Length: 393
Image 1 (cartoon, helix red, strand yellow):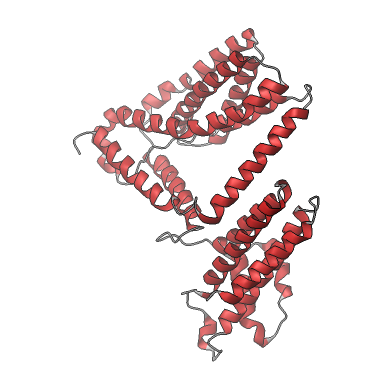
Image 2: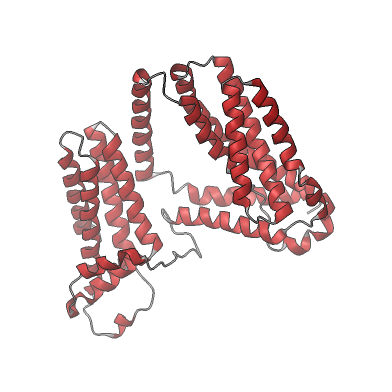
């Protein structure tokens, strides 16, 4: 590499390749269908609410609080790696060039969410709060500027204090972002001037400390590793990611459910698989995520056919993925030493998945109580789940 510009370009190319390689498996299939129906239903509900919303509704307060929280969460993306603690030391004086590119990418990747949220709140601010389009547009520009300020401030704070108590810094920036947007949308000039002074001086308060403190490689390496691990774990819910294994948690609050499996010799495999399902994050959160999405669709989508398609797709996904995950386990277990029938684990896994489908059907049934023929959705979950278990290999 001839310069830090080449270092950033190479790392950015590798990073985008990694993200695209795995996330292309995420937004396909049943999730794409669910997202389409949920967004359509949410948009319809939102438009209907705007027609009847009272002018007394605190729309400006709600919009600025949500945006303030999103603006405050501005974790920088630096793509720093473990070997940099040694190899970049000779170039430490030139690091600002590298970090300027990193912060620009962070801004470009995070500004999309801010812009989308603001555009969603635009009709509410226009129709309910009665704001002028120019005022709303100025608020959008201010929100984008605040996003850059938040990213720069969090990066500087992490450098100066190695990330210690970063939550306090975030709370301060959330409050400042909320107050600034609230003042802009309410056209309050004196609070705006005071807040501008605070916002400008806030990151400057530790500028000297940043200049005197060596770059904390350990903190930013750990930050990048945690961020990438979060991406890999999310993608691992949809496809196999090498070297990623679901963590194990006891979940003591669910200890009582093990009593549902009768204590008997013939139930050994069933008990072991049930316990593995509860304690393994990949399996448990897979079921939980699909069940919650099904419940949200049943609760907020007012089109019965659409609900049926969504819950059927998610019931199929739950059954097929859990069955394959619970049967095809390559881990050594003590029960392998005992002369049990070859298909004992498969039968036990099917029985456990059937239990999860029943619970999912009950949740969907309860979520759709206010919809006509709500019981049909529960039956669809049961029928599709049972057919998947019987017909799949």
